[in-house]
Length: 238
Image (cartoon, rainbow, N blue to C red; front, top):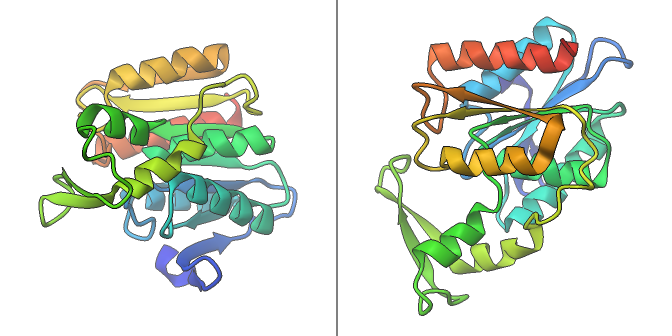
């Protein structure tokens, strides 16, 4: 089980899991979780883990530590370079797609699968949901969220400002030619229109699949089945 291989990384102050491929020549699938998501309990992460293990592929995932999206990107590069030897497949949930694209700017990536992907969302929050007075480094923004028991996330504006170093404005230097995006039509956290814009910027190397009844999490059994199907399509190059 995935829980059995989870370890702590004291250097980065977070947890991670790595299962090497059955043979050194086989690729590793890296699952990059979304904002304040835990890969250990994520249904999408477990689906990717089961897919990889059942086929002898490697699996690697980690949780995001404190810091900005730029820090998460740097951590991701470090984990991937430490534990993989061959070009990897990246599966990015929510802002995990953003991080996957940043990683692919730095190193060749075999393929990327985005699930409810969102890019540059911190800047949209900063400019569209906060007043000018609230855009203060010391301000703590209580952003309403159905995913937290309190009904909101405490988000330091410093997190939004420091994430500006990770903003993607140029998609031309992304070193990945096969990108699949799965997006729920009813996604209110990362609107479908934003996914369409990302797909358009990526051009012919990206395929966008719209899930008619899908929300942001895409964690129903039907959604997870579709995830497995598209992951297989990506990995098997069908």
